[in-house]
Amino acid sequence: MATASTGKAGKDDAKATPADLEAEIARLREDVARLTEQLGRTGEHTLSAARRAASEGAEQLRVKGEAAVDALKSNAGDIERQITEAVREKPITSLAIAAGIGFFFALLSRR
Image (cartoon, rainbow, N blue to C red; front, side):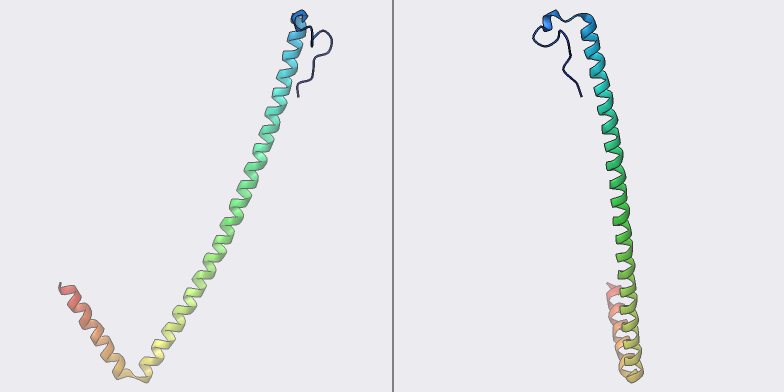
């Protein structure tokens, strides 16, 4: 950071020589350069942390999505087994229901 200039600067700023002012400007430039470097490192760290968090979030979403798909497949398989069992137990009733559904869809498609 900027340090208080030693020597004539302070109370007697009006008596500061051009060399003193140039030295103070050089110190300020060095301070600004160090701050810029530190901000750059902080920005890089923040960016890498954000990328890491996004990557972890995406991985969690992928895992949850796969679990949801597996659950849906399992449920669909259960429903399919139940329908198959119902058709085997009562084939005439199943045929009548299928015919009724077909008739209903035929009526809907006419309009």
